[in-house]
Image (tube, rainbow, N blue to C red; front, side, top):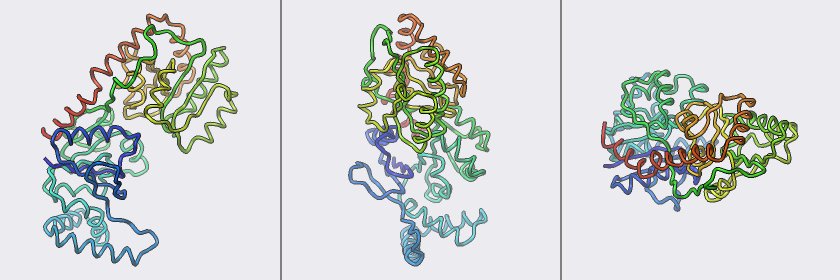
Length: 392
């Protein structure tokens, strides 16, 4: 079976979910082709087919390049070219828009595929008809931002996607139900396949549930408003006012760094809060081994791999009740769920966890580790993705 996966770019080092997925499908015997907006990268070991470029500020060169690609596509795949042209025309598109759409799809529609799968819903925009003109099934993944945020800025952006998709992969049931509320047919076949990890790579910090004299708290995630670090910082301010001795370490980078550093300064937390920037997977694992409590105060999450990794490392996890986090953590069994945007409640829960007996904490830690091993292994994820494409 031949599967084409459409991504905005070659998966980054941190995007382990794509690397695991592509590797698992390839090892299962599928022929996988990656269609991206990036240039071909030698270090990426799978077949890559970059989109034809958009030459900003060079209209004459763009005109001739577009003309060449359109003629080439018409020559190689005339029926598909005409089907796409006809389909776009039926949807009321102008000739200019239709030709742009064919150009955008040209690196894809000349290939023979059984499935065309979009790694994010947003990557399917202006490609909604591509699978159909190729005689392939169309799949799409829901991961978080593409369902939670992108449609807010682009109302109705997925209307054509909902009409053409054959099967949906979602990392949480919440995301599928939200898509249904935006117009996706609730009867559309879908499969929940969560992110996966390699639990064996995460060593449990201790085996007795004890904490250090100075509590080390950790969050891993990009510095973005949706992670709601303001609530986390306010939580730390409350802990300090209660006389709790702690470090709060943040791993990640992003546009909010300067603002968050200023918030730390205003809160008088310069000696407690540390911004570590981007760290490798191995460095994150080492830091987790030196952590007492993992904290995630996000306003929205599709699922959150970092929380899953923290549970695999046997860390007591305190998370918000945002979306997919409620499916990631089982409250009072593998961690604790707190109402989002309530620093007072986060601080209260952290203090409760600190005051717990070692035995109480250890029970939660062991539950979390066992569930990570049982339900979130790479082997299980690979099996589910294999079945996703074989069954419809």
